[in-house]
Image (cartoon, rainbow, N blue to C red):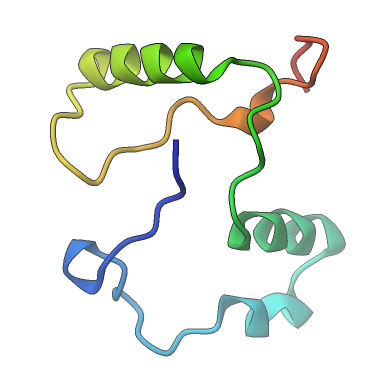
Length: 87
């Protein structure tokens, strides 16, 4: 699954010129860490195989009636560690 890189027509331009990280001085350390981590590219898949991600993503899209772009990324590769145990 790729990140949610939205074009302006798909909602990516909702707040033109907004620099989210410029607001970080007003946040606590935990919030800053979470937002900063989400600003970068998605992490590599650590638990599922590529085929399993494709299957789980297709199943979740069907269950959630996500037939059009932009889809909510349900299968997030950062949810499980290499040993298969949830974070």
